[in-house]
Image 1: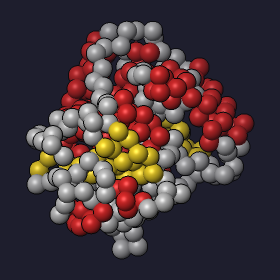
Image 2: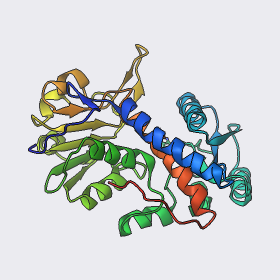
Image 3: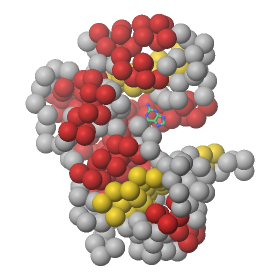
Image 4: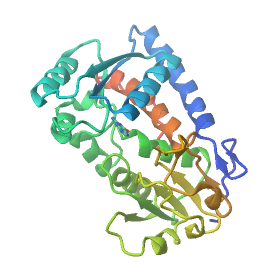
Length: 301
Ligand code: GUN
């Protein structure tokens, strides 16, 4: 790739998502202080249903990060077997609560409740994850006020690294509503040529080999082999799976890929911290949106 990424967050080919997230959080903390001076103390509610162990860890990390920047948070934990009506009741209560600026439903939800129906109930102005159809539509129409945190975290890393996407070939593997589909839209908005691959894509390897920028979000550990990576490519690994040996691994074979890539995000410590940093930014945005306040200048990639 002819655009050289030179940045504090790229060291020996490793993209330091933790450092990038710290830089974002510094700005969020400042934003929270400004809001507090106006008498506004942002607050986000995390809804978790059932006992998925990974979800418990993720929500815990989100609560902790809120504390670092002075955002108030509430963790609403509902038991397995919660009905759609019960969950709807909780969402509606939080939608109506003047003290709550932002609402997040941790995914995946258990089978007893419908994910789409639940997400669609969140007040779009409080939709901190940006998963409501109104916000996903806003993204396709241009810049939505609230955009999904993982893809916007990847875009922010790209921006912080000084990567110019104009005319570059970006390949996204995974077409989820949470990551792949919104990310494809964001990359196209940044003037990349985008290929969106998924489980039915024939000859995945041949597509991956074309990628100047590769983003993988499949949840299939080690799916992408190092010799599939185009030399000099930038690789963003969204996958994170705890393996039988207790280690967290991504969808890309990191050691192999590092030999060819100009930059790659590690797992953990790559995309994950940026997802949470974006969540904090979105919470501040929600606090302004629900009050009809003008948005401050927004960092957008
Ligand atoms: N589960 C995995 N990723 C996410 C995310 O970005 N948001 C929510 N709410 N749940 C998730």
